[in-house]
Image (cartoon, rainbow, N blue to C red; front, side, top):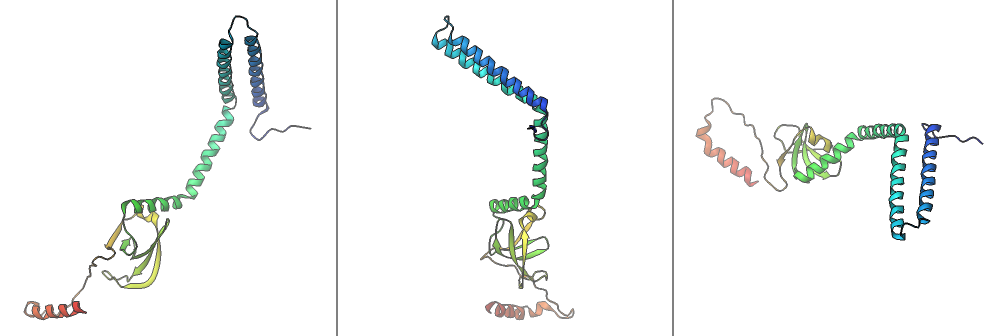
Length: 205
């Protein structure tokens, strides 16, 4: 029967490791036997020497094995680094979304019910989870707060690349933008009372 070593493990390294461990075990057995049969040392001193020698031999074994297997350990560490880099690249977007969720939580940027604008997306926050925010989109016209009936999922990774502007807090006042077109020959100041009356009627409704 032929013994096959794992890939990347050389026979010389295995033999060197076996030889090192064998020598240390033999040395441990010889010194232990000599200390136990020594008439010049008390049992307490012999135990102390036994402990010191054992610790020294273990240290020598660890250092020796590290020196023998250093090339293989270096290769293994490089492989682990490559795998870690690949995992980070593959999950970059997921990590950014989770980080963005933590950023939104700590800064209390917005909550459900707020009307926000981030990038090209503008709408009322309907749902927030660990990865994204669901918006009930508003009409694309500037200044409009009328719901368009469609929704959009905004990943939290966008919070690191563009600001989130809160247009209206939940339960707060909303700013409306109106555009009034008048004929140039009409004197608005002469009809200001009429305009105030119309605005009051609109506010009542």
